[in-house]
Length: 382
Ligand SMILES: Cc1cc2nc3c(=O)[nH]c(=O)nc-3n(C[C@H](O)[C@H](O)[C@H](O)COP(=O)(O)O)c2cc1C
Image (cartoon, rainbow, N blue to C red):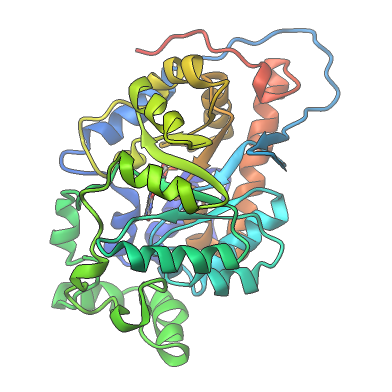
């Protein structure tokens, strides 16, 4: 087993262990992947200025997000089908998040349901991400279940009005729901650990994995080609829906996928408590700015009115500190926990999160700062 010393090591392990179709679904962007490359370039071009001889003995990584104290300014992002990376992957990630003291956001498109995740991680700070379905009454019924499972924070994803163009998925024969093809069959057969440890384990226990939250009458096996019309994603989602949601969702409301000051203002006007400044990891639209480029203006204008969370492209603890220094209260991480999970199951997720925490701590020590909120950028975006 090679040493796993940084996120790229975990990614390489995931590449070996997962079928190519699943690995690329997680790893890659959209269309020509320009936005994905820029994401990294822009993050690399952000520099932080140290202060020397401060003599801080101990750093304090704690953050307070929406009234909750968390152990570091990191939240697990919602990722569809995390349960395909490892058996009961969503429960494992929630437990790892609980152990290290950070929230985990469940995707509408998770394999395991919110009730199962709650049962597996009773004390976890669970958030829920909503993709609104065309039949809003079904979404409302789902959110009632979510609330009953003790979830206080709802994250409404606003940046996915339609399915993105990811050509590699077509070439690999990967689609959601998954369709069988000879190519996919060979891919799966040549990754026997995943086949035995994940797919067969589901098939022999709970059956072919499905989108766990889809209503019973529409629950389609991920092998079925068509999702019923009523549970298609609502491409007409608009601010009126957010106002409507705000009227009856009793917990906190966050809008994910905001990249402009204007939209951040609309989110505030609609009664949201927070936003996620996000390009969805450059997976949807290939011409988006890197979120860290637009974050400072948004934080500057709305930072005292909204909880500003940001994400996309985080590979190192220093990336987390860069986002915080650019105005984020906390960040979300999507691919990293999946790499941890793929490389070593629940322990892999634990180890990856500890590694990230240690890197944040090291960055602060080197910068001579006690908390991430004291760090400053030298505004050197290229
Ligand atoms: C495999 C995968 C699945 C995702 N699924 C969802 C989803 O269901 N809902 C959502 O709002 N965002 C989804 N995202 C986006 C993440 O929530 C997050 O914005 C992004 O992954 C952050 O970038 P990072 O992966 O570089 O950390 C997904 C991302 C990945 C990598």
